[in-house]
Image (cartoon, rainbow, N blue to C red):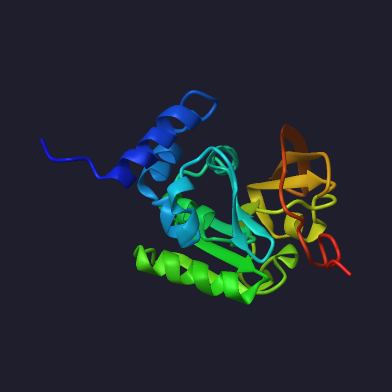
Length: 220
């Protein structure tokens, strides 16, 4: 039998032990997270920890999210394939790549130019052609490309940013961490039906702050 590549084995072990044993049941999400090499999105010195059940620093006071949280938020989007997705906070690009496996097009906004460049390089090196990344205030969305079938926010907002709700298509879903970035936060699921937005709180979480017009002000 051929020897199993250690990094592929690590990804599959992550899915088996960290995701399947919890409440991640969407097979498309599980398959995507088996395919995306998380080690490609972390600094070289952290690659031995790439599949740990925890977030990891990626510089600029930002992190790559815990695999379980990536899976939970992705599963909450209920992606089936044809969707156009807005991601707020590209960060490392790992969540971006997972989304790219599951939808038609990803539009991702990152406020830190260095992270945007690194993420773009990582997703391009892996061959994803359905991702567009730009530098800007993600809390303001991407008006030129709206509406979006799904929106995922990778940082904690003080409340659901109204502008993102406005950019959500009918029958769309928005997933966003909400709360004090230094304390209690919860992943909030927003569904749009016509002009009505319904809001559901799900699990507790811990994210870096969303900085921008729809988030927190920059640290003084």
